[in-house]
Length: 294
View 1 (cartoon, helix red, strand yellow):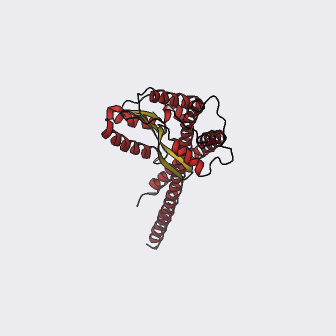
View 2 (cartoon, one colour; view 1 turned 90 degrees about the horizontal axis):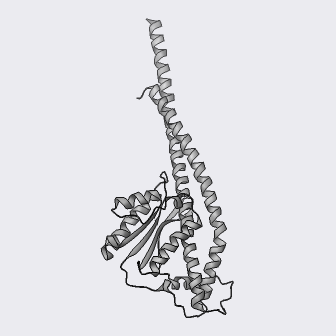
View 3 (cartoon, helix red, strand yellow; view 1 turned 30 degrees about the vertical axis):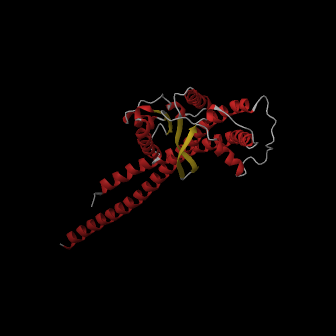
């Protein structure tokens, strides 16, 4: 059995760790609350934009746009969202593990040299370099402090590369925030834009409060040409905020679990300490009684 001094030292050490995990939990919880507020403030605009698109598509107009053209895939861009720091459970590892699977899948089809990876977050950027792939830029600041300007610049770069024929497909990998305890690993095709999926949203009743009978001027192609880039830029920003909220939720849960484990350890060690202390007192009393009787 460990000595009283050793047990006391372990209790003090775990108490110090407990203070750190509790503080980090409160900070992560506060950041999660702010991230949720940001998403809630942005959602009305994003939903209205998608309602406009779905109603526009359901009006029976012939739609032609370079954003929806499917070409032979020779080069693929992958945008991966993770975090700059750790201590958030399996948040980063899940994305990185899935990225390895996607790289292996597309590497077998078009070759690893034809994959353009955009890592949003230091952790995934380091993982990409270890895979032998050169990142397409430094997006660490965007992961730490999400803002529409940087998200829009990233979307514009992807859109221009797609329109110029430099890439034929763009995919997004990120953790979707479902609840504080649940983050869903998500993989989506960003380009070419899937209009059938948007139209399906209309069939399910999304945007049913708006009339679909539009008078389009100057032309449906022009309206779609202006509307689709806005939707695509908003999509990157939405995913960025979603991933950011999922990160803070994962860190809140990880720190909560660490705090609970620390409390359990302290209780167990306190019990051991009290038993050892009681045993030491008993031994001293026995020595005194034995000395007196002798």
